[in-house]
Length: 285
Image 1 (tube, rainbow, N blue to C red):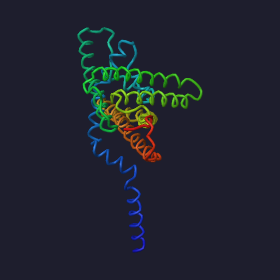
Image 2: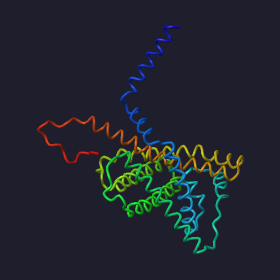
Image 3: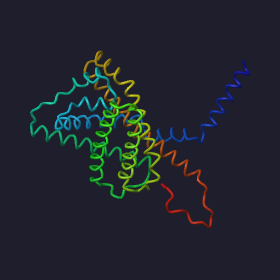
């Protein structure tokens, strides 16, 4: 018994030694500094409150059903799509005042989301924006976000109709999402970080987005159907809230893991000789 206890202590000591100074310790420490649970919950709630009105508005003008767009992103089956569709009713008649109010509220909400993403990137990736009150950058990012979400949904629908579509969709979504977040980080940081140093954070974010899409297809159809049966329409809202919070986690965790990877890669590079001038093309913070 004493020998087993000593062996357990050795294993714990070895695990603690490997953990100390590791990437895992760095990530956990930064997550604590970011207060990630509270921040991502608030971020996800704001995203839900701003994105849904925006999707309803766009779907109304495009004569599309909003549940089709949500189903594409969440990978919902037909039954779950019908359940989500019960939450929304888009009237063929549009009040000018109602549309104007919806636009104002949506714009205010999405600007808040864009500002939150910008602050997360500043805290995680470092650097300072050249124009700290540059509203144009936030508006440009919102427009690009709409294009990316629409393109992501289109890729999902197109890929499902061809052989090997899942693999092709994964490759296409990975490429498009990496490009979007790579550009987003550079834009929202005001060019304070060079492009090469943002490749890893953008790539990790894109991979996590793919994981979220795959996990959503396996989980949310059942969750939405069950929540609707047990709690009614409010249960569906809870499920959607969970998905938007997970989107916030992808944004934050992707940038953080990618930044730790970038820092480790820079640290492993051979240092130039004392008499050699460092290359100006090297990625730096």
